[in-house]
Length: 220
Image (tube, rainbow, N blue to C red):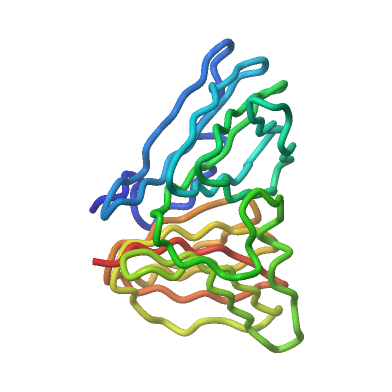
């Protein structure tokens, strides 16, 4: 396994990444095939100085408020649930006025993004796909040969029958409640919680009410 979290166990990114006063903490979940996924916890009044990269980074605020700034001033302010794809070749820094937790996915220069995502624009993952009665809606956000990032909405009562994915996966519950059956064990997942699947593990998803999730899948 390349991902550090234990498989088949529901966890809270917020609870596992409690900020330490005066400190900025990073915890890398995985680094493989040129991609990296990390959690950051920034205590109130901390700052990560501006740096520029040739590739975009996907930032998603889990809790708190994150100010993204350039040497010229504030670029964007992100609240919990907000995401941003950072612009390339522009120095970008991060500042937290209150305790803040966010995740960061480092992409590649040639990463294939959905056209609706524009670098530098703030958006909410949960708002990218609507609900439709009796239907499952799927949107590929990133679709690379070695990594996929997908957002899905499942109307209440719909579900994904048992299947296995070819790579490790992280599922982030964005809205509602669902029952995830992992290797035969049913687990209830709520908005704000996360679960990791091992490569090849059997799993199914049943929407107990309207449910939205994001899926980060690494491929061998």
